[in-house]
Image (spheres, rainbow, N blue to C red):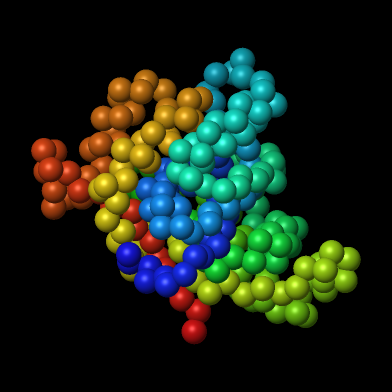
Length: 238
Ligand SMILES: [Zn+2]
């Protein structure tokens, strides 16, 4: 595979909302779990504002989205799903969030960390990227370097919880306009869709959703013979 990993990797996914992993990189995650790698999610919010219905109780939605996310992750073969449950829509890449992510990195001790690109402010001519996505990406990258691997940062995590510094080897940044890796996920596109269907509160009309997702083929392919990619900015620390 593109990643050229010889042995089993631990891959930590840090993103803002339930459904972000599946939308941004679900097919690649399926590819990794199928190859024997261990994937662990830590989601920073529970997506409790992910509804345009004013009658929605955010606490109910939060609970529903935990359930949906666990079901979607199971479709992809993900080992573990965890939530920090910050309020949806209010995520800020501050020092408190950075410390929380450093703590998670030192706890999980991943080889690879997956997040999203904080530089993606808008996409094309019809979409602004959600501020939580940018905040999650910024906080995750700031936690990876330099804090997580440096023993002079967050000595309390060492002294009180025994969490030793940990440096990840690679970062894979999804939702980027500046990719250097294109993963061909054609064979896994339907599995990605099956995972996304589990986010019932989010996908609306299933048929329209399916058509929209199937239309996201690469420009060099045809509707009869579609090809699909997920792209990343991959950083391998020297
Ligand atoms: Zn999101």
